[in-house]
Image (tube, rainbow, N blue to C red; front, side, top):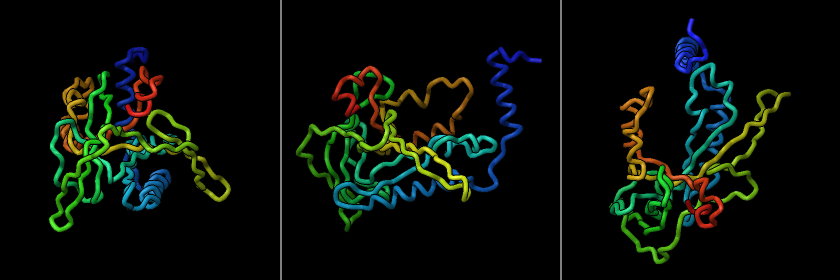
Length: 246
């Protein structure tokens, strides 16, 4: 009998339990349906226009990752990241893109990823230029940005509580006629980066004790780029500029 005080033994016991008792869901949970509904609401509420553009939401966090039973009943909230199709981040020094995925707007503000004095991926996004789609050829042309000192800061929601990069709201969900439930929802505004930035160059090759994610998953993640979110390092929260733009 292994001692549960041994860290390795505890990990083996938990792994054995998950492998032997968890199974794929036979049908979507009510949380998954509700989360998908919230994504659709975000996408539909902010329609395409000449200033802001459309919101492109994605389900993330535990609701997206815990797709097996019996974990799902213990999901306590729903996490949604969204990017605006009129904003794009690129690594510093990269040439302006001439082609973009179909979900992007015809008019896109391009931000350059600028190093900060901190390691571990803390950066700034500085507005570099605008690109405008040539509808007859489907490619983008570059427009000079006359205001070169503009930095990215995420959308503010003064009436919502903020935790790091996320704004939290609680939405009533009626599971049954007589038992309404309150399910918290965290939304995070991010900027899409279609290529893997040098600031995260160590992530694909870092040591992974338990071999997860595996190499195929790591390659898939890197090939799809990343998202940049607005959050300040704990050492920088008292600095007005860094708190706003890091």
